[in-house]
Image (cartoon, rainbow, N blue to C red; front, side, top):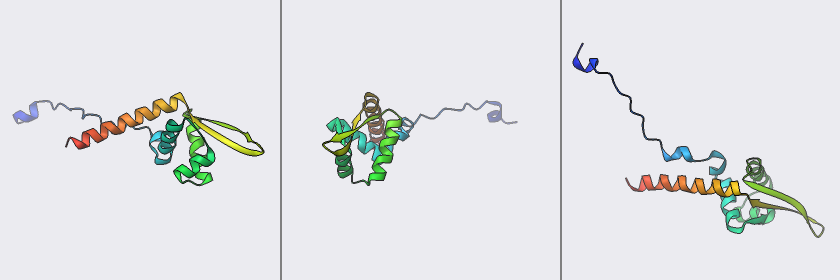
Length: 115
């Protein structure tokens, strides 16, 4: 047995990547876009979001449902005159999740720019 084999090998834990802090619910492009727009305007109707993000009704509706299920946005339905309307607003949890996502992305960018 050689001397190297007598010495126990110490496993070092690699540094945790900043990528582990990305939130799968928030990080998806459409949902991230929704949260960013809603953080800018605080509340928007469905038609405004559809036009701003260039999405279909079904696609936008699905992503709003996902964000609402995670309490990142609130949805209010009503009427403006006789026309049905849906208003979406970002919640406190949504603002916090967006901030955490931006921080994680910034950390990733800073790591890559330093190399």
